[in-house]
Length: 110
Length: 112
Image (tube, rainbow over all chains, first blue to last red; front, side, top):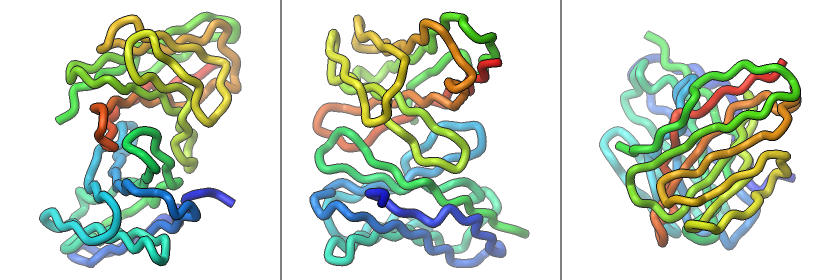
């Protein structure tokens, strides 16, 4: 079993929809949680960063961490075609090596 | 915006050739990483460095080698490329004490 599980999708939603992306993990010692966005043929870029539990909001993006359930989520409000990309969750025990999910491919249609 | 650069972006090469993938960052980060990413698969850490003259192998076994002679430079070398090395290679860096890694655009390697 993988340490981090993420549904690969693809997930297709209409423009303006609310998108929910999720990851589950098995290692309860993870402390740092991140979401990266990766466009085709590009490197991942950091979207959201959370230490320990709780919620964090940045514009149209909200990240949630539920350590009791070992579950993290990324919500995208008012989704746009420019949000079409692969979204990777990542987490780590210390502020160093990251463990990644496989990524969820999102397609936002007009 | 992260200032981390990888060259070349694309490389097609024959079996048995020696190749070096370049990675440079201008942020003064102590920590640097190399990942391998295949389509539909998660990123796998193959090498990392926590400072000059410090390198370690990652979780995924790799026939590549790395060096860290300067803080800003972390090249990856394959002495004899094989078709099984065909993949995307991503370089990243982070500040000490920060869990945030910044990625380059990647090198897409094809070995024929």
